[in-house]
Length: 320
Image (cartoon, rainbow, N blue to C red):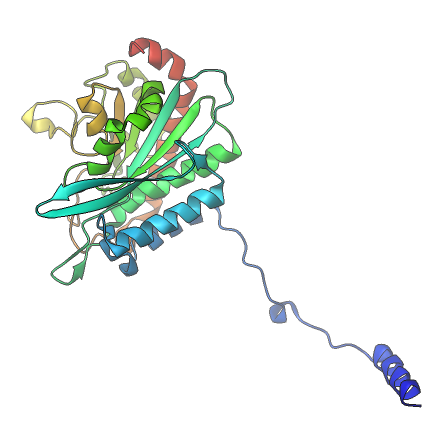
């Protein structure tokens, strides 16, 4: 009898009208971010207060590295060297021995050439000073975000040549990560394959709508290529800041490409001129003019794609 009653109740329940659930009541799955939204989100997260200025060897630097590793894995990048994306190095600062960690990933090219293009940006900044967090949104969360955007783009549409992505630590105060990378014997096979190093450092802020490309003073074959890129760029792409003339404010050794410059290896550096918030606590995400940054990031991707397409001719002109 109890079984019969249960069956009857179940039958009546099945016949009863079911409540209608409105779309607003359903648990919505967030829509994936567009490439431009992700670019901005990467800068926002990397320059947040909880990253504590991303000083090399600090807990904030470790948190930033964990976030970048997550993004590299999300994009689907393989290690460029060995089995790990992480490559620790040590250096001395005053009486302390500090450990930094470079991140090296790669996207294989579709061609048969063994030559490679290296794209780099540093993820460290200057930390917390006198109780104030130096968030380093432009310097250099912007360069890391642009590198990640290019990596995602190339994962979807593969380059012709192998592209090495180097996200380096310890740039502030001596280019420690870049110097350790090029001096590492394990990195030498990749170094020998690298035709051109492309460095992004501070690319998100310019009241003049200007982005600079440095390097053609040292490698004259770069100039016509940069001229062609400038013609299609979404910002005003200028050349300079790479000669020893005092008025030029030489940047040849002022960021991680300096490690390649000292080896007389070809490089090109993209960056903006200093702004009022350079190396100040006010270098925040909210101070970035988003329209300029989006166009600047599109410009450095345009350049990176152009270098990849022309890498064989670049190698010949560079004597490689």
